[in-house]
Amino acid sequence: MAQRKFLLEGLICLRNALVTLGAPLLAIKAVDEQKAVDIALKLSEQACEVVTDAAYLRQDRTFEENLNEKLIVKRRRLTRVEGNVCVPVTVLCAKPAFNATTIRKVAWHLLEKLRLEKWDDTPNIHCETGSALLGGEDAAQKVLQEFIASRLNSYDQGRPLCDTLQCMNIDMELSKAADACKTSSALLGGEDAALKVLQEFIASRLNSYDQGRNVPIGENQSFLSAYIHFGMLNPVDIVTEVQRSSVRKAAKDAFLEELVIRRELAHNFVYYYKDTYDTFDCLPDWAKKTMDEHRHDKRKHIYTYRELEEGRTHDPYWNAAQFELVYTHRNRPVFGKLRYMCAEGIQRKFRKHIDEYVRKNYERAGRELMPSNLLSKEKKDEVGEALGPKAKRARKSAPRRGLKT
Image 1: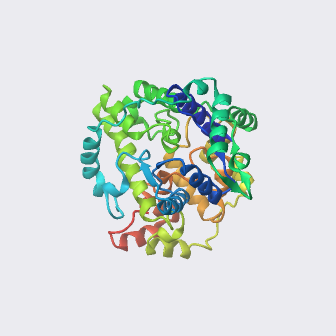
Image 2 (image 1 turned 90 degrees about the vertical axis):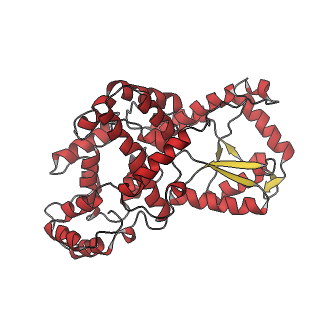
Image 3 (image 1 turned 180 degrees about the vertical axis):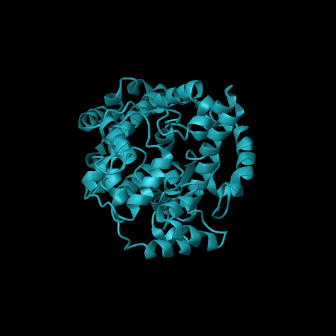
């Protein structure tokens, strides 16, 4: 529920921004992907173009591809707007990139060119129903429902589309999510909150980012991941603000390396390995062979889901991270290096359903894992450390060229 609350706060912020432009926001519930495609197709009959975020994860790309195929038949254009990364993956590299060195120089060259473009002008919108929309969400919903009822034909078993659409009352949904949320996170959703977090980071923590980001008990993280992932903050804006600041160059470079290069590399990975990015099939043969050889190794400690969740293990670092994540939910993510170490440790014990279990219970950072969580920048070393000396020997004897895992 923490994730749902965060998302709904973002929708309310978006709705308020759109109202000032005289543009309505209609949030519609769909029971499944096919229903969502059908609704978008029906609404597109009164439009010349459909605009969507550029998709990278499998579920989002499948939805986008299905929608585009059907829009082509209806002679409608689908435009993808890039908001996930600074440089679109296919522009940066036409094939899988095996390490950061492959893309670093090209990425910065393209980014500097893209930043020269004037793209953030506020449009002048003249909406005939603007006066009605200024009355608030109820008025906006009424105008939109009248439009749908008068312009669109029957949609589902002969019933008018307006009867079958489940239009969300965002304020009511947020109230329900807040009541059901078992954590007390101080992280608020929305662009306004995201900009405040960014400015606070630049003013108080960025200057020591290069030195303090790898200290687990420190507070030197940016806390921007969730905002970027859900489109509440554009990474290009972050780059602009960071480069404009007066903090030390070493600190800027360290942060921008993570924000630009490492995120680009992660998105490249999930884009070109669409079908296998979250399975063992994406691993090189040496890693799969080594893990299989150690499948039946005796473990000193075996835990249940409940014991892991409640932080009742032999590892004080895991226990501390779980307490912070589940009970206090402080405005700080689980420390990155600890996350890598623990993930490799529990992966061998709970191979099935782990991602689904985590997503359902706590994860605010994505409907699926974020691309940057699916690809670590030093996974080769992490897998070797998790599996022991034999894995390290296998890694050293493996070909140097290949996907970083």
